[in-house]
Amino acid sequence: MSTAPETAPGHLDCALVPDSPALEISGLVKRYGSRAVVDGIDLVARQGQVTAVLGPNGAGKTTTIECCEGLREPDAGTVRVLGLDPLADARALRPRVGVMLQDGGLPTAIKAREMLAHVATMYADPRDIGELSERLGVDSFAGTTVRRLSGGQRQRLALAAAVVGKPDLVFLDEPSAGMDPQSRHAVWDLVRELRDDGVAVVLTTHLMDEAEDLADHVVVIDHGRVIASGTVASLVASSTDRTLRFDSTPDLPLSALSAALRLTVSEPSRGSYMVTGAVDPSTVATLTAWLADEDALVTRLTVGRRTLEDVFLDLTGRSLR
Amino acid sequence: MSTSAPARRRVLAQTAFEARAILRNGEQLLVTIVVPVLVLVGLTKATGITIDTDGMSRIDFFTPGVLALAIMTSSFTSQAIATAFDRRNGVLRLLSTTPLGRSGLLAGKVLGVLAVEVVQVAVIVTTALLLGWHPSSAGLLLAVVAVVLGTAAFTSLALLIAGTLRAEAVLAVANLLLLLLAVAGGVIVPADRLPGPMAHVALLLPSGALGHAMRETLWHGPLPVWSVVVLVGWTAALGWGASRLFRWH
Image (cartoon, rainbow over all chains, first blue to last red; front, side, top):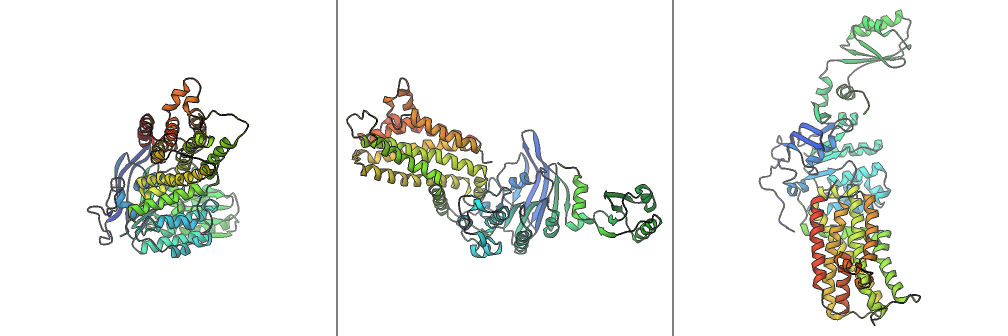
């Protein structure tokens, strides 16, 4: 076994070239049998940014990330991680890339503290374990065997293991799955801090609030393809539509109301209505006048921009999979 | 920029990690240490059975075979089961993304088993010596060679099944194969005592070859060339299969 220093020839120092992408995927294809799970994905993630890969279950998020981690070999396309090939340059990349797998992958027979210390020994200059444990609340269960940890505790330990080597790029596959709100905020704070330190963070999620709160850049994937990408603001604003929601008497005549407003009206649940389209001040005036004619009292009325969830559901459909 | 710890430190850390995991696990400890010691004491002290020991004391007759059995439990059964569950639980994938890498992980697993074998041999040899064992001093070093060759063959078999079957299947297959190889393979009982063609077949099995090599070295001294050929052959074939077929997912 070689003990030569593991620096790759010609590696890019991304700290000096802030605009060079930390991750560049082009035309990625990965098939399982004859089925293309990833079917031509292009994606760019930059240093000092959080990139959220969003998509329904089975959209191809995890497979895409695993191709970047060197865990799967692409069938077509190229993946460049910190300018290097994840398979051919794996030795040079391992110390610089942190990984949190969706299914954890933590050895279960040892204590949480030992697990983190073990991973730390693989790096020449790891983060301070005490500080990291405190940040993520790992110290509260440090003496507990991994097997006995709750889902959220395991996630926090896995995140600690992913960042203990001071990576330049971290892949977090559904980092806050199974976490309580306190844990989630501890994780989000750490992710923001990594970003502010210049780390590129690539996370997959199907939690809209996570993407909305954390991500500088969102890539929506479905059926193995990118169907939208951009900042949260640009995705939400890409439609000029607004949504007006109001509660009133159930079973109002929707077609008549729709005609009066010249907008689409629906009643997603009994007594709760949604108006979508170019909602403007006159819409509200017309609506309240029409309801007064119907002798229907409004008990709640809100007008809002569309949320990322609205955009996501519009893009990926509302049917269950 | 973050860099890896030196390769030696990574592999040593993984070795200690794997050895600790085996020695702390109650079932593994039972299979790798307690069972062989009980077999040794039982065969030596049992009064109800008569065994033709070729004029040797029972402890001299049985200790080499018990050592071979112990090597099989750690390098095959224990290694196969631990690796299969690590594979299923994603541990292999996670650790292979750290600077340890796949080769470091495998090296750590193999060296971890060797470390466990040192403990096994120490416990069994101490027990045997207390029971009056007198091995051939000329064969002690060659017996170590036999242990290393046997470990290589059985580790290859362990990795082949751990990397290709489901974890639950590995659990069953690893225990069943251990039993079959131990009973039919001329491990505890010398191959020439087995009935009919089994006497010849057993010497072609890795278990029979290891048992034969342990007995010849610890009874008489020389390492039988045929056993070396068989063990190296199995290692090459199984190792080739494992490297081709092992799936990390």
